Structures are given as structure tokens and as C-alpha cells.
Length: 511
Image (cartoon, rainbow, N blue to C red; front, side, top):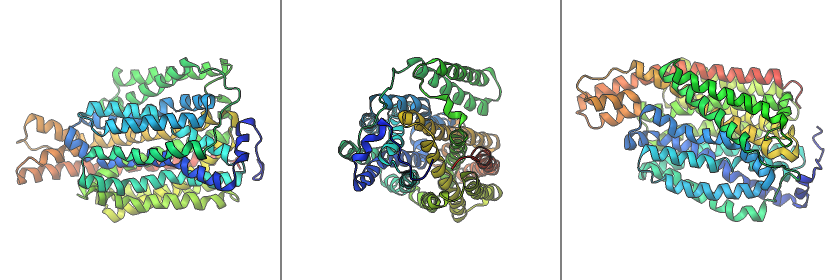
């Protein structure tokens, strides 16, 4: 596709009435849900120690607090993207915003970890309505590819900006208020969207949408939920019928979903898109790089606070340089991507991230705050550039009429990557901790159970012990936690290198 070609499908014709200034203001509005999602993910990681101390979750429950939200997103994004193609993408965005804001207020006052997990699941339902419309509406608003590249780079930088803002704002909140306050950040971000969205963002929909296929929605959920649950159980209990069974069940549902789509007059997702190397390769890069990034955030946020004993605000500030590097690299890569093929620029960028992860693996538990900051700068440079290029390729290679469902596939890869990041890297780190921690004999059965589950649980138990016994417990727990950082970081290195290889092989014909 030429950089100067303007698309002419009826779906996006409305964007031509927009003046240049209104297009960029529309982009500002569409970035609000992006900021919200990224802030929410970062803030929650910072709040994990406080949640652990207050609600006393098990290690598995703590992972579910994180995972259930992106898991629901991953299961529903394609369905919601397809729904937006039918009822209107802007309308879906506004419905999701109102629901997300209301449930966020409820989650802020969750009385138990079980209620918090339920609230996070409902947030995932409404969150699935937020992301597909934002990327697909950019296709409607920016018809020139050069402008769209820049718009998508700015849009993608919203993830990094939110991640950078989240630790600072969240750190301030956690310094002065209970952990529930971090959920209330959704309200000031979503209110402007509800007010300005109808004024600045044009409606966009598929002119021939067809009906919604309920069995496909059920099959997508039946694929995602059992597979992720099985991976968790496999990491915790090994290969048993209770871990392998759900994985087999989910994969079987996925096969039925894939076989069903070609038989439908109006499928939830056009599987022919995956025969395009640029589209499928961009999806693969999104998935693998996000697994590495989110998995890294999971253990680094705990390492900074529970091992290095930094406050939530101090821990957030350590991560800011890397997240700022992600923003800068996402913008700088735009003019480079006009001249250098994606099959070159994406692997080179990801190699920088691989170097950062390898440094974390070699440093292990000896890294200080400066070392962690440098590692995250390397991660941010590579992944920020790769995400910008891959998201633009998804938009450029999908038909405009099905842009909602197609962009939802990219978002599904992102959210599934977030799930697998904490599932794979998080459970490996947790299993390593449990196998290495040595508990003092003086602990009660309840204290031993809590301290053996997570490092956060050990810190909470130590707060109620005499200083000598507390020091012995904390020393053992921190050593056990840091012993798992090296192997976990090596797995992250392999994931980033795998993403670079996918880009090298699949994006050779992409422009």
C-alpha cells in the first residue's frame, strides 16, 4: 500500500468531514481508555504487597487477582470488537466506559480477595469494550497512512505513558491511602471520555455486519479460560489430570471455534487474515513481547518493594525511565519505519530488549535499584518500537469494514500476553520461592502457611514477630525470592528472542 493512498470504504467515509485539528483532538480522547488500561495494570502490580498484607490471599489467589482481568479481556475482545462493528464502535466505547467506571468504584471497597477477583472479572467484561474501538476508530479518523503511523505511535505511547504515570500517581496514593484507592483512578479518566467522546469522535460501523454468533463467543471463552487455568495448575502441581485436562479441553474448544468460522456467513473473525504474513507476524510479536514485559513487571515490582525495601512511590520512580524510553522509542521509530523494512527494524529493536533481560538474568538478586532501572530502559526501547510497528501493520493489513474485530485480535494478543506473562513467569517465580524458602520452626501453622505461599505473605507475617525471628524469616524469604530471578529472566530473554525471530521470518514482505 502506498503511503499516500487514501482508503475509500463506506465505513470510514465519515472521517473526511473532520478537519485536521479535530482529528488530533479525537486522538486525544481515544487515548484516555489506553491510559486507563495501562495505569490500571501498573498500579495493581504496585498494590500487590498491600493487598497481600490486607486480604491475605494465597499465591494462587494473588495471581488470579492479576490474571482474571486480562483473561476476561482476552476471551471477550474479539466478540466485543465484532459487536462494535455492528452497533457502532463509538457507542460500544461509551457503554464500556460507563460500566468500567462504576465497577472500579465497587472494586475499591472489596471486602475480601474473593470479591476482588469477581470485581476484576467484571472489569474485564467492560474493559473488553474499551480497547478494540480505540484502534479501529483511528483507521476511520486517519485515512492517510503517514498520519496514521504517527497517530498509532502516539496511541501506542499511551500504554507506556500510563505505565509511567501509574507508578508515580499510584505510589502517592498508596503512601497515603488504602490499596483500594488505586481503582478510583478510573473515574477522572473516564468522565472526560463520556463527555467529549460524542462531540469529537465520529461514529463508525460495518455497513453489512450480519448477526452476532453466540456460540462463537462461548467457544472463545471456553478456549481461553481452561487453557490459562491449566497452565497455572501445571506450574503449581505438575502434570496431573487436573492441570492437563483443562488445557486439552481449551484447545479442543479452540479447534471447534476455528472450524466454525469458515462455515459462517458473517464469522466473528476472518481467519484468512492469518494467511497474511504481516498480520499474523505482527500478532505474534505483540503476544511474545508483552509476555516478556508484563512477566518482568510482576517480579520487579515485588523485588523493589519487598527485597530492596523501597516505598511504592520509590519503586514506581525506578520504573519511570524505562517506561519513558518506551514512549520515545515508539515515536522515534515512525520515520525509521518509513525507510527500513519491518523485518529488519523490529528484530533489531527486540535484540535491545533481550540484552536487558539477559543483564537481569546475570545480575539475579544482586541488582540494585539503578540496575533494575537500566534493565527496564533496555526493555522499553525494544518493546516500545516493536509494538508501534506491529500495531500499525495490523491496522494497515485488515479490511476497514472488519476493523473492530481485526484490531481486537491484536488486543487479544496483548491481553493474552499479559495473562501468560504473570502465569508463566509469575508461577515459575512463585514455585521457585516455595521450593527454596526455609521457615523458622517457631512459626505457628497459620504463619508458616502464609509465609510459604508468597514473599508478600512472609513480609506480613514478619510484621507480627519479635525482631530476631522476623529477621530470620525475612532473610530466608528474600533469598528464596531472589534465587528465582535468574531462571525467570532467562526465560524472558528467550521470549524476546523468539519475538525477534517471528518478526524476521514473517515480516519479510511487509512494508
